Image: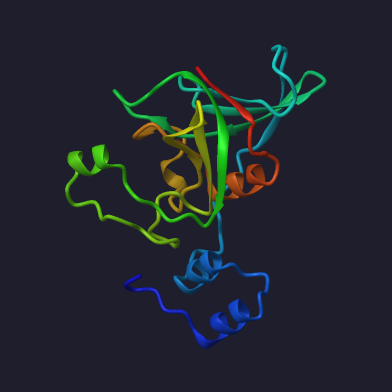
Length: 186
């Protein structure tokens, strides 16, 4: 937790069981930018057969759709895996986290030895404000739908397989997605 300091105010809020969680207090104390980047959300026509709530991700289009039903979906602009890191398949949301900490997977740390063991919540955390953890067969895939504190990186082939939205978009999406939500990646 080097570089993060809980103030007396944060301890008071945490002690009283107030609205801030420990992670939110840490993120706040780390001066997380108050601007969460631009929202890319738009309502679009959807004629596919998936039920309302399903998430459809297009690697090629670099978009995430959440099916609304009645021929509509909401679409978000995202970043996807760079060359060699895109994947396809069907998963589901197995866990949700506000102000997540990040532990780079061992494969990622082998590629880049300068990565830390752990990045706490805050402005330097690549998972941003929220993360949806993708699971398959009861196991964590290590892939996420998550925010970013650097919204200028959106719309490209940028990640190691995760799906990155602006913090504004992931904050909105997070509240609409339930554990168990089906996610189809094409």
